[in-house]
Amino acid sequence: MFQLGSIGKTLTATAFARAVRAGTVRLDTPLRLPSGFTVPRGKTRRITLRDLATHSSGLPSLPANLLAEADPYNPYAHYTLKDLAAGLPQTPLSHEPGSAYAYSNLGFGLLGQALAFDGVDAMLRRRVAGPLGLSDTTTTLRPDMASRKAVGHMAGETVPDWRDRVLSGAGTSMYSTVDDMLRYLAAQLRPERSPLRHAIELTQRHHFTDPATGLRLGLGWHFGVLSDGRTVTWHNGSTYGFSTCAAFDRKSGTAVMMMVNTYSDASHTFDALVFALLDELVGS
Image (cartoon, rainbow, N blue to C red; front, side, top):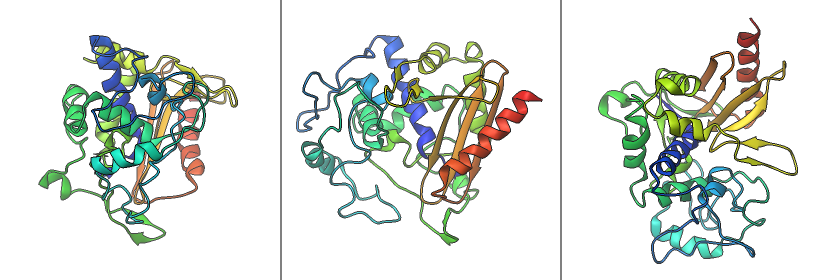
């Protein structure tokens, strides 16, 4: 068992895509939360659920009031819905919704809350992990899971697992195994064999391009390019004790998942290992 980190965002995006396919929301449904939660909005339009799922909402990476009283090794553990309600009015947008890419844990946390307020973890188990047979992908460890959980490290020291009761739609407190993630990636490679075919296909469609960098995004997923010009679909993740990266190439039917129980701030080097391995496998 490893902490999965932000790869969990793709599960939240899949739950969103299921809701779109079911007709309960639209891609461009405005972000709505219960009374008492003031949702930031742009000058020209409101934030939509698609904006959240493509990191184009203009929201910052974290709520304005998250870190003030945080445990530096477990930064989300103290944060409550009451804190979120207090922090949202203090949260300015960096740009108009839908106009630029800015990676946001807050955005994906709010996407989860918009889909299942105060019930995000149960929703992800019921709507995504359960149907895909991901029995070890969860935010709550069963006793048998705890006994086989890797211990997280940062700079050679043991660190606590992250806990998050509010923004867990961002993947901040989810656990998984490489077996579960390879099963998950198999569904990405062959959606037609999956019970979530239409939702998975929707997450892998192109939904946004950042005008400044040309970065292309699906719902949750990022798109890159292998050395031979093929498109690679990917996402990485980290907590202060774990680093992960998932990447796949639909055309060749090849996927790579890497999980380690140490945090590295040189995340691009870690991701490069995954891309290099995928490149080698695709070219072999």
